[in-house]
Length: 488
Image 1 (spheres, rainbow, N blue to C red):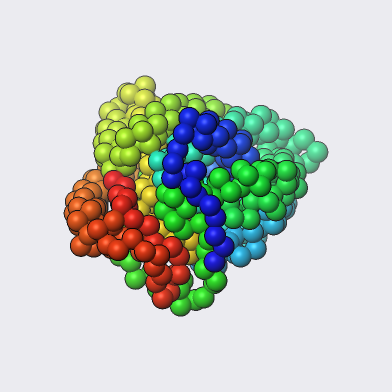
Image 2 (cartoon, helix red, strand yellow):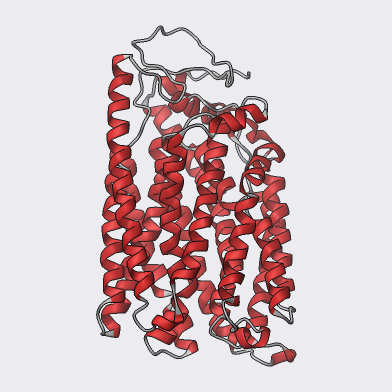
């Protein structure tokens, strides 16, 4: 195992505080920007079909028959879920620069090719390939961000990621509105222009990603003009002092599979599953709800789908700053869930269009905020590089399965109220609140035992145990001492 001098991290001074602040800014500028762009492109390219659903695409390709449109949505998710774990492992093995630039080029090319499909079968085939290619984007970036920041810094960075993502998504929707007006230009329909233009943009960013993306902290010197050797040592020392899992042990499938025995991974996964039911119901079907449920035409439906995403940046940043400052994740998640319940009640039960549209704002802001909160919640309560890899892949897979469920709860025959979607979404948030309560009690009791020296949490030991270097058989990583491991 490589060793690093972390004495400065353990003994902070005003000078070291300034150095940490400067280091965080450099990491933010490089990592958060490109991560936000990649997540945005991932979401844009996978959800163009949403904006295109209120154009001629459904009738042109025969997607308006039976449940073909819903199938085209969930088949993407199934393909993504199947490749989640190997793709996330590939990020760690191949390296972020080569992996993310390569897949960005691939899914940009697939998006471009979608502009030229002529049947629903071809559309579904490309959606399968797109799901396979995009499967490692979100879990891989979650792993990379959690590897660079301490636990107290992560939620705000996930919020940066989410707000940048929804800003680009909203802007992309407006661009799609403009592209739809190119209908019949150069012999292409409006929806074809959407796929063509956004595919080309993604391909360009694929080349940029190779130079802008950074590697993991212990290999940051391989990044293109990023950190000095001194800054690299400091970055590694900060993470080592915070949770002691900078360096990953050699890849062994026995180590990977052993991580799946931890039940809390599945608890986190269930919360992401329930969260994405809400996300899918809103992001994929909001234009249809606005058109069929609120009486707007197709252009108005595309445009009115975007303002709630711009608004979502406000609660996401505010709640994330509070979560990081006070190291509270559970209460933040609970408040967001309550806002989601109120928002969906406003969307589903009143008859006034204005009240229902305000409910869309409230629900969208809450679910975007909870992405950041849930991401930091799981990342802050897991240590060990391969365990973080497995957890990121597992929760993203559950998240994808939630997308499958969410693609079927908005039923056109229930317009304009869509009561199935409303009740399922409200029920999902009640379950999330219950799970957070269970986790909070469990983490509190575990931390109490850790402080007393009667329990080892996540391969770390309390100072009540002997303070000598120690190793575990499966993961030979230095054990820490005296910290509150679980962050609730």
